[in-house]
Length: 228
Image (cartoon, rainbow, N blue to C red; front, side, top):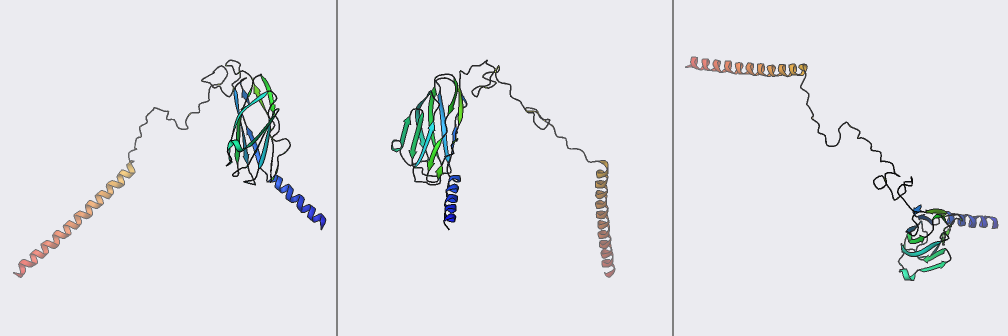
């Protein structure tokens, strides 16, 4: 019986971890030295609304934390606990729904490749995986003419780095700006012959009906004169 209870408790704990929240970090992969880099932490699948949740992000060494904002909580910004220690930034807040978003900005002065540490979060439903959120960002000067088509460049702004867009022709043969003339084909000889025969048949039937009516009228008139 005790083994069954232990097994049941472990199953519940594992299920709570599997159903826990998930956090995705969204940020650019390339930025210029000293430019403002926006990082978004999207929290989804929150299982315990109106219960405190903690989230910590580990910034790259050399990054300067600037400002932040949050959505998905009824708390005012000044009421949210924020802790910054070395290159770690943590928030403790009460989510008001199934999702929340924390947005913050950083700047990195020197060129190089920088790595963000794992995201750490926990609430009543569970805790994050150990390797969640490992990402890198490259800091270097974005220069037109370095043979690299960066995310801020395109063919119009830097044709030496970016290839011309591929224009797919339309499926039909009509190009933009052209006009087409649609010709309704004439009826073929067989159809014309059928129509002619139908017309002649209608005319013939009409003439027969008229002739019969005239004949009946003449007979009635002749019979009337004989009675007189």
